[in-house]
Length: 178
Image (cartoon, rainbow, N blue to C red):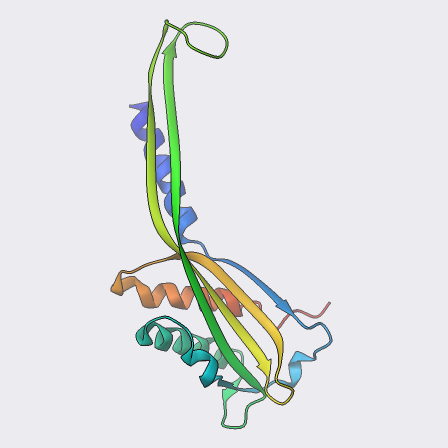
């Protein structure tokens, strides 16, 4: 009975670790980010991204929502160009659960110790989304955000997961003044 409870707790921790998005950002510390009020998507860069057109639309829509919430507006003559880049890899997780009981001492083989060893393997697809913000006049990268986390192929969860990635990445923009 203890084994079932322990396995269910382990399963909850595995699910919780899959749900998070790890984010980081980098930026040019010499740039005054308050000067940027408008943006547009860098069409040439976005066209090169090797994901489905539907996922591109989902990402761009989520970026629109987040930048609009920050008071920025889309423009034909933008201050910033927004570019994206994605990559993915398969991730294999192997977890072992050892249980034993009996009597004895020390490490190694013990004829008086009974128990079992359970090994669980799972695979998932881990994706990385980069969002680049480029000064439109200077054509220089001024900010880059990166989000890494498990992605889903489930159509019902895809839009929510993409929004979560974009929201957490752009939460770091503009950088906080030190």
